[in-house]
Image 1 (cartoon, each protein chain N blue to C red):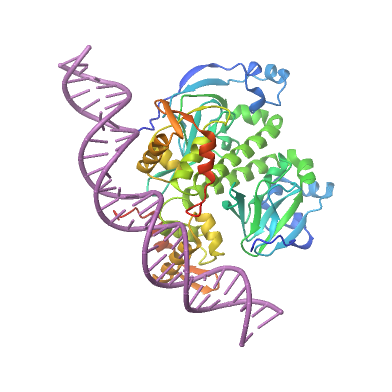
Image 2: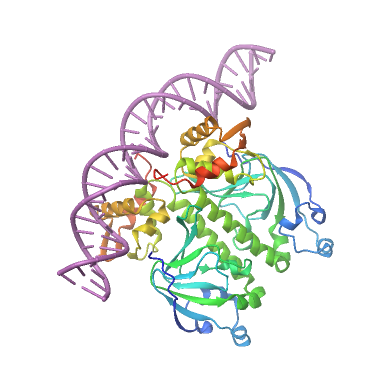
Length: 235
Length: 235
DNA sequence: CGGGAGCTTGAGGAGGATCAAATCATGTGG
DNA sequence: CCACATGATTTGATCCTCCTCAAGCTCCCG
């Protein structure tokens, strides 16, 4: 099993008041006074690919702001197989359900080398009124991502889905993007790892992407966009 | 086009303090005193199938608690086609984004004869602190539904997806359930209306469901569950 | 009755799944 | 440092599901 439960490596206590992406995160509305008033044991954590922040059924002790990298949210089907129901990237918050549910209902697993801030549920509960706006905004953001997955990554041919995935993995202004295991690509797009591999290989032959390093791709944005919206045989 | 924008029929002002499903709704935490303090122009609305509560791009003026019936949340793809990204049923809240976004980003369209409470954004904003807990709970609920769609209705063969849809449409304790247009079934399950029709016809022949009235089905729960989890040709 | 929209059913073909084998990356122990 | 084992990836061949195109059918409404 690739998705081992390696305890993520602890890095150090965060200095929230000097956070580089503070306008993106849950604490955006807090004042410097707020930071000095509360003792906040926020941890800064590096998470290697394959490591889980939490597993389904596990007690919800904290939520996590993604500072760098990419996570998958998995749920398990009655037959034991699993399905990726959401992707979470920089600025997204994992485990928002700590505010309303005692346990996590999915697994959060890093797909790339990632960095997160761990915020204990107690801290969130205490700051809750002050975080109201941002918590709403983060729920909204999580919904948008979820709908994006349903919309872009579950519709159309394998070609289209893979093209949309490449376009999703980084903003159009960035040339390179990191991919992940073919099995995960499959679970995300509802295709088999073989079809994922074949389609990516075809994209490489057609120069739509170029693998500059292992699982690091240079993208031809315009060409990929054309594929993403192309309609069946009528085209 | 079936999804006409018929203005939903106004029914009357709601008596929130005597609401039959008050423990399910946004106002669960409000006291009777709260109700008498605020003037709340909450409307009780009947919505016929096919009518839209709102459309993408439209200004977000209110949110809606579903009291009866079923709604689809649709988003549109660049090529003009659409995809159902979520289903919302009794107790769910449509348009939670009014708290954070100026416009709606999807269409909310009734699939069945439905009843909703319309709560203006101003009312929500004013009561916001008191609703904090319930708003969180409703976001969570909406996320769960969204993930359920991704998990159950986008995975596996057409047979499995249709079986899971039948199981989703009503709790196992209820025998009958209402279905909707084949086109919507298709948009929800990422299959064509033809395949939806064929699969449902096959279920009827196999006595897995029985159509007691137009689009009202009696279900063999156990048999459907068996199909929902059956694994490929290895079965 | 006739028209229209949605539903059903049929035949054929394409795309993706499945099974299986070869190649490539990574880490381990000699 | 190299040989080997392990697991992921790639590729191939075959089969089956589902899409496509198309025709006939049902239900509803004037």
